Amino acid sequence: MSKKVLIIIASIIVLLGLLVGVYFFFFSGKPGVTTTAPSFTAAGDREPIANTVSGPVEGAGTVVAPHLVRITAGPVAKGAVALVVIPQAIGSSTPGLGDTEVRYVERQSGNVYSFLLHDRVLTRIGNKTLPGVQEAVWLPDGSSVFARFITSEEGVERVATYSLPSGGGEGFFLESGLSSVGITASSSLYTLISRGSGSVASIANANGTGARTLFSSPLQSLTLRSFGTDFIATTKASSEISGYAFLVSGKTGGFSRVLGPFTGLSTLPNPSGKLVLYSYTSRGKVFTAVLDVQKHTATQLPVTTLAEKCAWAPNGTSLYCGVPTALPKDLPDSWYQGTHAFSDRLWKVDLHTRLATLVNDPSTVASITIDMVSLTVDPAEDAVIFTNKSDGSLWAYDF
View 1 (tube, rainbow, N blue to C red):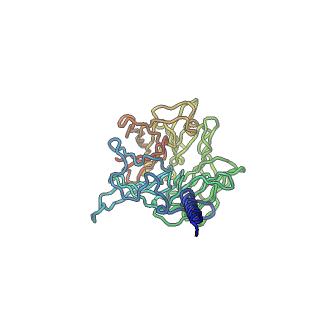
View 2: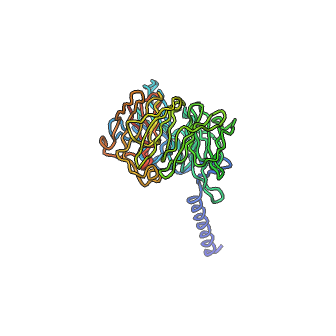
View 3: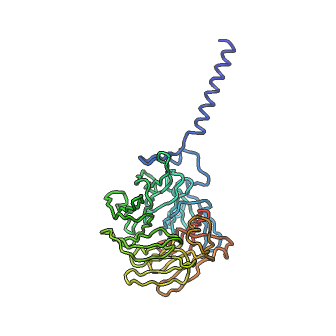
């Protein structure tokens, strides 16, 4: 064989090697998600995403001020669950003291993480990668999360919802295009979908079985929240239109009006099914109050904020709220649209005494501004977990 032929063969081999390398560099290992069947990439089968850990990692998070902890620097999916646990000390056979475990989904990777707040130990507990999760709806025990993300179907963007076991394993998809997903105190799953003809709500077991239609309504753009064995449905909040809130029977799906008409109306029902926190606007000002549905009485709160910036304490008679230091006149629209951000202080409101207590002011203790959303109070009321709407980072106030 001539030297010229050998050179040609060697060049072809090198070229083929380059093509194979280009293919694997650009196309191999990409995570795939469809709405017809689960299709994920295991976390170990791809290059690690920046700032992910397999854990456990001690000393995680950042204490920015006494009791104030930044759990993540990067964005998380909106929604976390806080559990009371007795952790096993790392490298020891002696159980530690009680701790608050915070479970959350990292937005970039979709990985599920566990963070022990007192011991500051971070562990990745899920072995699936699901990039771009925007919202995480958890079962109360943290065993599973409904991860919601944007997907494309025939060129049309829709919201997909996947039930992801927090500790690994295969889950299942819910119906595509759901407007909202929620979990009742008894761990039942409820969903809402809006169409041109109105809204349809369904309720089922957490594993997706036993589904039944809760109601079908001509009203569109509703939000639906659990309220004891019933539900509260609220029309879309805007300073430009009047809003209404309705008590929805969990048995019959029947509607009865409990609030409205109020402009900018948003609600946060107490899971026990007795009280509803609500906020609304009037002549450019924001008002915050609590409605006793059984007594048909309303009580104005001593603080002013939006209902979305609060969480009910486990006792059902106290609230923790992010309270803005200043409120513009075009709320809530400017805040929803992201054209305005708040600098919040964390307050506790006791509804029995109507006493408001300042818990923490991040701007004073740490010279930072936090726009608090997705507040969660752990069952022992040892911590308040919240997300900074401005950058998606996850925070905690550890009592």
